[in-house]
Length: 331
Image (cartoon, rainbow, N blue to C red; front, side, top):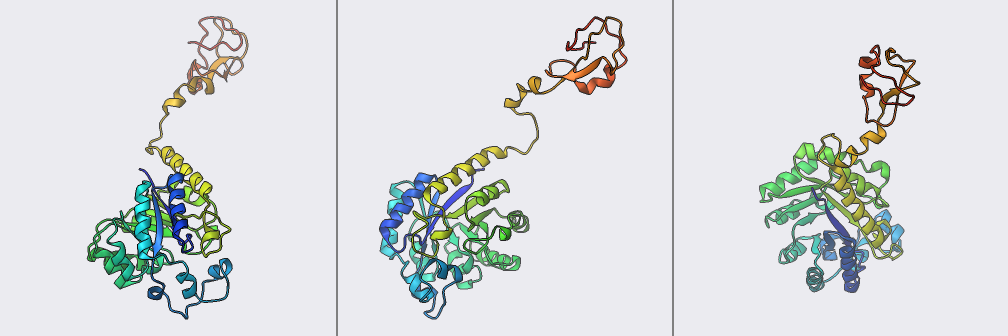
């Protein structure tokens, strides 16, 4: 099964459409299936009294509030329409996560393959209902959520019309500590809710999303930027384009390596059996009529003779001809 790879540009365009275009092209060149942005009106999602998160203070000016930060990262609806058209022109799927009802209504007019619900909206009933009423496929992140909260959100989405639903395991910290990733939760979510489960990664580097694919993740979402040294809240916890390309390539290699789960010799292995395995051979010269014993037979390569697994059947038999040292034993 092919893993869907979402290159999460998010707000790493810093509110500039030209940078958003470059991010979309970089995602395409890296081999991602989707490039995803974030659509919002700052006044609809955060109050002017909201403080910055600690990671935001570290990656931007620690002064000021969250409203001013987010306002500076907005693209207008007209700019998003242009961005969606540009993505289509370079043949990469455009997706954007809405963070408010108004943005849901706007994005619903754009042909997106699915809705991406962020972790922070999993407990937002009006938001979930508005998404569900469109009856489009949904991918929902589960960062910070309990199993009960995830179950309730799933029930809301289903009861209001969502049939095609996938979950993303996620640790909502930037960057996420390796000790808190808990990749085994992918299987836990899959078994509990009987849904496809992917992984939204906020760790540094590319190892963890690659490992997630080996553990069954059907979707990978990963933040990326044009330059990690740019000023902005998410650049530091993002991949640069060459790293994104390496991640995509590695994931595709892992997919090819997963196989069918049935242990059997592969086509390329068969030819190596004779070279790598051993046969029963003469440890020293054996004359016709001698008895085969542990003193005069041993095992050595190649594996083209009698298998050492027949050792007990050979011991005690009479040599029907003479053998020089290292000759393959025959019965």
